[in-house]
Amino acid sequence: MFIAGQLCEEYGVSQDSVAKIINSPDPLPKYEVTSVPEFIRAVARSQTDEIALVEAASGRSVTYGELDAMIGRFAAGITALGFRPGEVLALFAPNLPEWPVAALGTMIAGGTVTGVNPMYGARELEHQLRDSGARFVFTVPPFLDTVREAAANAGCETIILLGDDAEGAVSFASVMANTDPEPAVEIRADDLAALPYSSGTTGLAKGVILTHRSIVANTTQFNAAFDNENEVILAFLPMFHIFGFTVITLAGLAAGAKLVTIPNFEPEPFLKAIQDYRVTNLMVVPPIMQFLADHPLVDEFDLGSVGKIGCGAASLSAAMERKVAKRLDCLAMQGYGMTESSGVISVSTAERCRAGSSGVLLPGTEARVVDPETGGDAAPGTAGEIWFRGPQAFKGYLNNAEDTAATITDDCWVRTGDIGHFDADGFVFLTDRLKELIKVKAFQVPPAELEALLQTHPDVADVGVIGRKDDRSGEVPVAYVVPRGELDPEALKKWVAGQVVEYKQLGYVVITDAIPKNPSGKILRRILREQDSAR
Image (cartoon, rainbow, N blue to C red):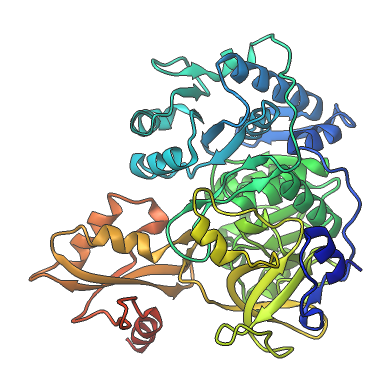
């Protein structure tokens, strides 16, 4: 067993409160500490003729041998364009076989990748480009106008376009046609590999620093617990999100699986891809579980190839798990993770599965349950904030020492902001969130971001935003607004919708006389949630 003392020795910190530490039931497997692309390429070179990636709509496929070569070609091509080690490439595109090629090729060139939500508008894209320092961006023709606007404002110099030539952009084909040798860049395990953006436990979206070491560790941990070998995996969850990037794409490729890509979720193409490509392993989020449980269209397709479904990003009821398992005649289970864990903290398996739980800790992972009021360990079996520690932990938030210090303790514990408990057998059950984030369709929506936007509206005097439970989306944002004179709630919703991505849009606007606040002016969202429940 990978015990607390070993972790403390590895991290160079004192051994603390071992009596209240929950340990993984499994030791951390031995693995080579290497860069993310070399980790994947080692697998690719061992099975060159096997299919690595398939584009569901067209049937276009890439073998592992071709993937290995394409990664090298992209690295050489962007180096020839002036990309230098330590620089950042942003990926603003839907799921396509070229997405991991560009990501892994950038890392071979010594760079860092930051995936951006392709539903973003120019304002949101500009923020991430500017904050991450991205000088290169990879995109597709439908998003080119948005990228041009954001890149010009953020000082992002080079646009790589998958598709036809366009003014002001370099074609992906020309990058791949470069015949220079691969760049010989020394990549260290603790170099920055990826900058996914997350709101952390509070506040606006910020870059999460993930190293080659932490990502390789997490893919190894996950594959040791959740066997992906010989699987056919549907890669439909967005690759810019940590779930789609680490848990599906990288872990799948590291296991030598076949990944079937679709650009986004649409009911019929989703079901057709499962049927046509005989998908065996589905990894989904709660709204998709509800779709699989209830939608009549599901019965029109042959989903008999699916052997297991793993659900993450938000908790799911035991009843919904059982409903999906019964309808599809497969194993349905849950896992738990966050961007700050490089993807995964705990997972259920065929051997370790308990309805309603998010499984047991990954190999080599520790956890504590901490009383938010006292800061001490909660009594066994009682709920508190879950803290975790392990080799998959992030290194901090980019350009944000304050939030880093608030999230990572001196003893290397990561405060998750999630409330839950462990049962006597080590299964974790999530019950609530300490953090203020609203979870909409597995995406994090910081109330502060919407409040800052709403406060710029001339008819809004004050505002507080909370999440309201919703069967389809998990939660929806609700704005309690103190108006200046007359205010039309529907018009305000439309105004917000014109400026933010779809999942950040307001579900409801409620007119109120005052926003409850503490003496220092902080919004008391707990009281707002109580008021909303009473309504």
